[in-house]
Image: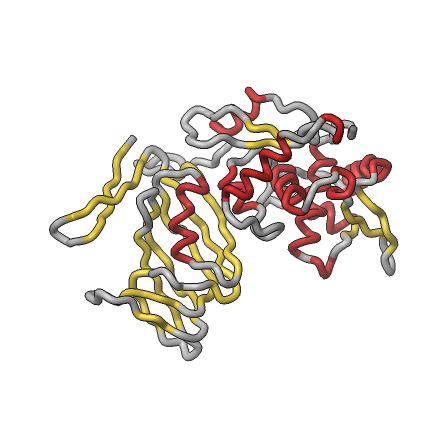
Length: 322
């Protein structure tokens, strides 16, 4: 059985797993690159400010456990992880553990987004099944590696935490879930949270955004920013009943709209390879060409639903203050 890892030791392993999948050309990592990864401000919770000396000490503690392997590069030592073999778990489990080591406790929906570039789960139930396997790992194999936390006040979904750093203080984790989200000051629609999604080539943009409220567990979302490309793009032009399919590559110029558990209402503007811009309602069949980077805001204290409006003949937004 492994001894409990320190927060920095867990962060080192998480970074090595992440960079192996996302920047394979620079993997294994140098000490400098590994330190930069540990101290990243995006996709990290908590944010750390570790020195190279501290990261080296973490590496030195992980090497005797065979969790980190040292190799010599052309000029500097480089480091890779050996998590899957040491823990006897598959790539999906390694990705889940890495996401929790990097970002702390998360809901299954959040973990699916966080692991998207590390391992592609077929659907949310597949990820949940992997979590259950981690939680039920036999004592003879080293015991459980993940724990389902009690539902935090105001949350619809349980969060999960890794156990590589020893038992989780449930009360502290629940307090972090309630108070840890960034909030803006003042205003009638405060930002309760920000979610960042990256969709891969071939994913349906509208379907992914339609799933987001359930997978990320929010009731009132809106698009903050979006960049990327589509091929094809499918939109419904103003006053038209049927969608229009735009073949060929198109860059996303603008994406705006609201997200609810009843479905999204999204407007899209795209430009073709000659710079001509077309805009309308985003429809299913709009497939990501290379990437789509999406920032979603969540309005605190509101619930968005959609109800049929006889005057327009469409399902329209109803915003309810909680």
